[in-house]
Length: 153
Image 1 (cartoon, rainbow, N blue to C red):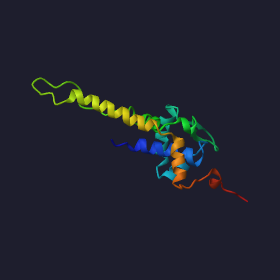
Image 2: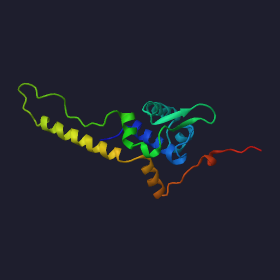
Image 3: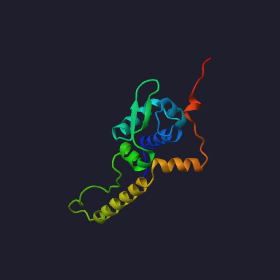
Image 4: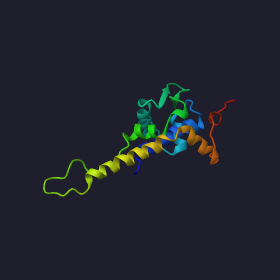
């Protein structure tokens, strides 16, 4: 299974909000700069995450995107489903055509279903809070909102 860039960048963006701004409002341009993604593409992905209830937004100079729920309640699986759709592994549809031998597709469909359920279980077993703890344990530096301020005299 290979995740699309939408899913990967979506997860990176949501993690960025949780890690660097502790879930508080963050400008897309700041997330895009830290993650090396274009703001326009990130904005498209964030619309799907907003629709799924993972992110919310505030307009204005102090606005931006923020977590719609606590980081402990947002699962990696939620982000993947919001950006990719259902997590499934599928075999070719339908029974064998007339004259064609059954190549095991019927019982293999059960294997693909089980695989999808297990992958979904792993992704649902990891929260954003867990990812933030892993980032801290790995020594990932945090850019706090104070680092982003400009002072004029």
